[in-house]
Image 1 (cartoon, rainbow, N blue to C red):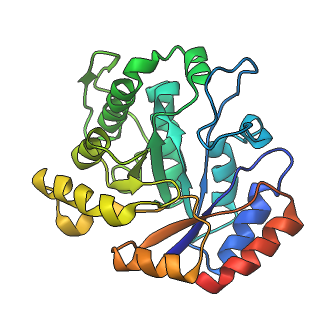
Image 2 (tube, rainbow, N blue to C red):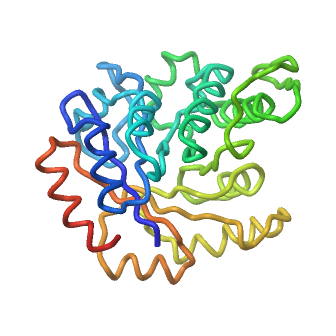
Length: 275
């Protein structure tokens, strides 16, 4: 099983360069970074985990800049987002960022996408909350048009792009794409329609949900062996990882603390038993 990691990298934590080097030297499979452009002080949206929102949410580094640094000092480490809030981006600019990172890293990028939970953050980006999923899906389709081998136009309800020359292309034509979110018919339909798999936070309830997703996936005509389920932000134990393996999981993303070098490297040493 491939063991990757995720962390809220901030202006107060270990740096992307140091962390990436340490991960690759220890044999970890990848580094996934979350995204929040800003956290409005006047908030009405409750923190999904309950209680006060941890301060690192308002201090996160831009994931693409940080992953670019990580790519420059490694040669094997996988690089990913967990997750990119696609609806909050200009899709033409985002397509260029993703393609550039994937091209320069030799195809090591995984695009984790999601639809967000913070209404105030999304509103400042001009996102209408009730249509954010449809907007995100359309922006993914627009980006795929720009990544196509030949100039391809796209026109949707929320945006359009003319047939264009848009280079570089992602190394494999499009990056591996995993969709985050809670189990449910809408999410599973979306995954089966246009993604490579699911990025469930925490990994709870997979015994029940993975068979359901597999059924939706196969009914959509997708290759049964191609579905990827990647539990995300997991606090590991030998039993938990063994259970994931029984479910056919081939990669798990372990949670690192949003801390300085000494604490993060200490946790990496603990996690090394699973690599």
